Amino acid sequence: MNDITGRTTTNHATNHATTATARGPLPRLLTLGAGALLLASTAACSAPGGAGEWPDTAPTALDASGPGLSRVVLLGDSVAAGQATPLHAAFGSAGVEFSSMASTGGGNVVGPNSEEIAAEVADRIRSARPSTVIYQITTYDWGTVDEQRDAYGQLLDTVTAAGGKLVLVTMPPIRGDEFYEPHLDELAHATEAAAEVADASDDAILLDASEVWGDEFRRERDGNVDRSSDGTHTCPQGAARWTNWLLGELADTYPDFTPPAPEDWADTGWSDDAEFVGC
Image (cartoon, rainbow, N blue to C red):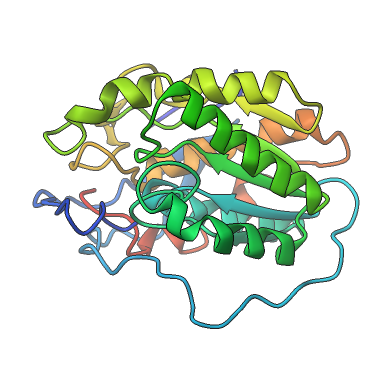
């Protein structure tokens, strides 16, 4: 049984095939905060699905978000897409509007395809008028420190122009393979670039998720599967731990936000989602 008290997608891009063949059953028990929580499903993780493609229709502008943590948009790659499933359940139980713009193959802020899709990402953020945009640094945030800093700065400008606050979150450590090997040094300084942007603005913060993941990839935690066999993605256990941690961090930033009890969101069926592969 895992103790995750703490505060303290699918696949890669199409040119990086996921070969997760060891798909065991989902862990049955999650310990979130003070209590043990039973996951109802013991089905095997689903096979990789399709990429999270943008819809053809243009976004429709929403009314302004309310005060505090009222409307949240998540940005990231397929790693974030998996984490969005428990986050959606948790925010729903707390009455917070939530939508995920996580995209397989990159967060579309810096790195591959970012130049082609940046304008559309900005349009969708402006249309959503979020109170908060959470950007988890992605496994595709390739580039120099200057390129990363400029990209995160542009994202901040877009978010603040839409009336929101930017929450930058460090990515889970990965087990670098031949696909990522040429870019590991670039990924290593992405946090530095994000920190510079956050430190220079009252409208951005950087949250260090190493409190959840540690500094190196760990497939299991206390005997339960935490991360995918592909060395990159998270499994339900890890995604739940991350969500529980993030809710606590957001409560520190938004004093009027009370994190929902794990019993309200951790056993609501999201662990069956096809985003979880190699678990």
